Length: 251
Ligand code: PEP
Image (cartoon, rainbow, N blue to C red; front, side, top):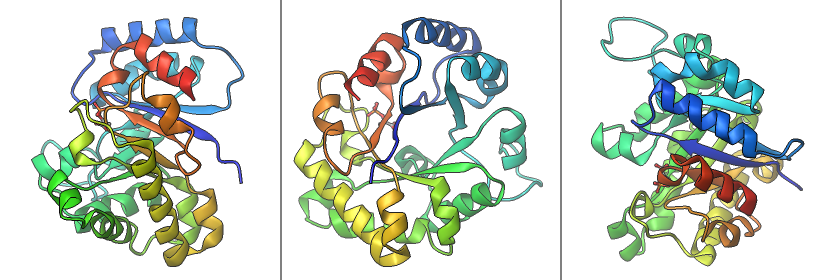
């Protein structure tokens, strides 16, 4: 089964509206038409709407970096699915390790966010990944297994077509350390196996699983050549449009 690859850029708390516009302009000029890859960008909330037209023209689909699980209400500082959709988001990142560790998001909360997003017709990238301690202790497969099962609890098979999983080992995010293609492939195959046993073989074959964690133009080609790696979620190296384009070429 051939799965359409995805290259996604997570800008975190970087890039103003002006910087984002410049980035998209240069991207569009450097990009070839007719490519068979979904290109997604996750800018800040305030940048979504102002760049939505330019992004569409450049063939980029926008997503948000977070969502609140409630439909609306007294949640100062939070943002709802409806607001994100109105601002031009089609996707949302859920369960990023920075949300888990710095903002205390638990698997239960992450599951509520996944379900709210899907209910609202937003597509989801569910991020999972183990810490260095967990990998050294040999519990990494079990940790990721629990994150996948809990994150997708009560998500119906028909909605899973709108879910992508990003395997992002916490020790590789923003550190310059990358999982070897062999280790990444092993975990991606394990994730596909979990989906197979929990939700069925058909959706397991269809589901796109991305690798994230210090992807750059040097390591991208070897990672993306692995059979169960369907593209990448890129943080730091997505901020410079030239390095994002080089990673794109590696696909
Ligand atoms: C990320 O934050 O999702 C990420 C993969 O970051 P980086 O590429 O900088 O490791």
